[in-house]
Each structure stands twice: as C-alpha cells, then as structure tokens.
Amino acid sequence: MPRLTGLRLERARASKQFHDGAFRNPSGMGPYLKGNRAAVVGGLLFGGRARIPSAPLPVESPLSAWQKPVSSQGLRITWLGHSTLLLEVDGARVLTDPVFGERASPLSFAGPKRFHPVPATIAQLPPLDAVLLSHNHHDHLCPSSVRELAQRKVPIITSLGVGADLERLGVEPALITELDWWEQHTLPGGALAFTATPAQHFSGRGLADRNATLWSSWVLTTARRRLFFSGDTGLTPEFATIAERLGPFDVTMLEIGAWNAAWGQMHLGPENALAALDLLGGGTLLPIHWGTFDLALHRWDEPAETLLTLAQATGKRVLTPLHGRPFEPAHQEAPTPWWREVRAAQEALQPATARAP
Image 1 (cartoon, rainbow, N blue to C red):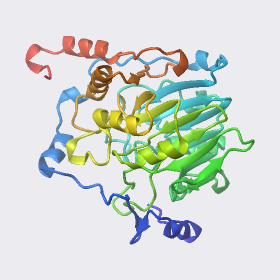
Image 2: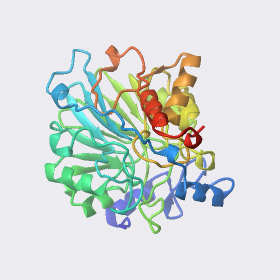
Image 3: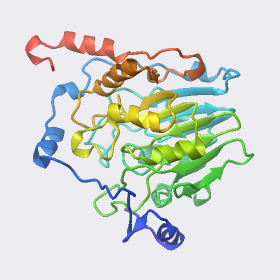
C-alpha cells in the first residue's frame, strides 16, 4: 500500500489531525472492538442467512430519467447503492464514493458481495463534473471503479493523503484534489464548492497503512443549495460546529448500516443518525451505507426499518428511495419502505423453522 511521501507527507504533518505518524480522531477514539472480540469476529465470519436477502431487491434503471432535465428546484439524487450517489445540483453532477465492483473487498474472489446489480454502469453515467471520495476503505474506494473513472478523466476531490491510492490506480495527479478538514475546493466556474469536514472514523486498505490517510465528511455548496455527505463516521459533537459554520442543509446524507455496538464509535447506525441529524440542524435525512453489502451482524434491512420506526415516532423527515430511482427531494413527500416487500418475499421462501426473528 502506498505511504505518504514528499509534499503529501509535509501536508499531513501540518494537519491538526496528524499525530505520531498517523491521523487521529480529536476524541481519541480508534478502530478497536468493544466487548467479546471472538464472538464478534465469529459472527462476521459465520453469520446467519438473514444478513443477506434471499429475494431480489428492486432496482430501477435511471437512464431515461437522467435524460430529462432537473426541475427548477435544481436538485435530483440517484442512490446507486451503499454510499454511491449521483448528485445533480444546480447544473453540476457529482458521483460520491463510487463502488461499482462486485465485492467490497481487497480480493476479487472473496469478501462482501453486492446484493443487487448496479442500476447503471460507469459507462452509462452522464458527464460528471467531479467525483467525491470520502476515504479509502474498500467499500468506498473500489479499484476497478477508480480505474474506469480515471479513463474518463473526471476530477476527484478526496481527503488528505488518499491521492496516493488514486495515483497508484492510474488517476492523473492533476485531477486529484486532497483536502484537510475545513479546507475548501471550488470547481472551475465557481458554481460548486466542496468543504472537507470532521468525521469520527479511520482509514486503511491493508495491515500496513492504518490511518495513514485522512477520512472526512463533506459539505457541497452552490449559490442555492447546501448538502451534507457523511462518508463513514461515528457520532461526534463536531457535527454541531459543521452546522454552525456551513448549515443549514437541504439534504443530509448519513450512513446507517454496518453498525454494531462493538464498533459503535466508528459508525452511526439508525439511532445515532437521527442524533447526528439534530446536531446538523435537522431537515431531510437520506440514509446511505446500507442495503448493498453485508458488513455487520444485523439483518440486511434492519437499519432502514429501525430508522423509519424511530423517525416516524419523532417526526423526522426521512426519504428512502429505491436503488436507481432518481428523485427530487422537494417533490418527495414520504419514505418508500420498499424493503418490507422484499422481506415478506424472503420469509415466504423460507420454512417457518428457518425464519430469522
């Protein structure tokens, strides 16, 4: 795995997040497991079938919708799976955390395999103004996806140090912009700005590069819109500072899946996602980082079901689109609990004795 050298290393050393040769969370929290580690690891390796849907997930093709112009509201979003979204905002198109490969894994033959086909391939995407890459974990930075995007010569905005991974995968250095927390980059023409903001997480693509690169949440700003994209993060009080400096947000995209109490300081989960939404100023929540890969111990649809139950009890506005269905938040009135039909079909296929609780 590439290590930081030269100017990248100098920039890392100048960062307030860099201490003793690695990036650190301000809270001091790290990627350690709490509780019975053997039970957690055993559960990950030998988990039950409920973690993977046995019935097909609904996936729509966005191609015809993408050919139509966005309304005067100027914001359309397509969830392509996990943390991959196509954001069409005031004339600009941004692809987030592009993972179009079959597995979220360093291995092509093993590791978490996607539950559903990608709604559109990279070749089918409309012209992109930028790719936003939150950090370098395998379920956010997919080598085959990056190599294909490199051929399209799309600018990539990412966290400090991640450019070393991108260059190794064939991205031209001139196309890479790396930001430390609170740094901002504006696309040519000035229509869209990206600000790297704090997150509580970690980084690494192997055993030798733990926390060698930074992780970030992100704020996207146009003259009319402000969007928040969490990347991966645990609950941090710094969300309130983000809201104070850069909010309020038209849509807040927060991760809800791959949560477990053993690593709850590094991911949000449904309950903490709603707490984060409050810290970030409220508004519309679009849950991401669920429904595509088996990365935790929970049932595949549990994050969405729990989130929707909690949100309805507290009056929070949550939108849950189908994979591949472009939607305009201003015209979407309610969540779509599509996973319930999948769950019902899944249970109908199983003998009563085999059904998960």
